[in-house]
Length: 66
Image (cartoon, rainbow, N blue to C red):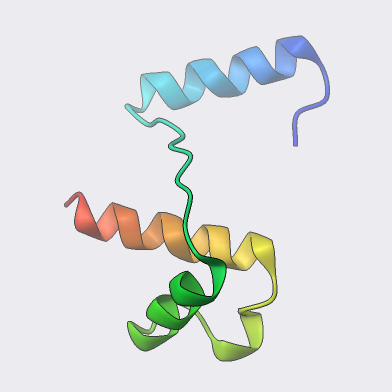
C-alpha cells in the first residue's frame, strides 16, 4: 500500500491512465463468499481472508464487464 501522498497520487494516475476505477460495493460477506466459491473464483479455505475475497470480487466484476 502506498505510503506518501505522492505515492497515492502516482497509483491513482496509473489507474486512471489504464481506465480503471475503484468501486466500493456493500455486500453480505457470507453470501458473496459462497457465490464466489460456487463460481470457482474463491477457494473455501480463503473465504475468511478479506484480501482474497476482495481479489475474487474484483475478478468477478471484471468478468461481468467484459
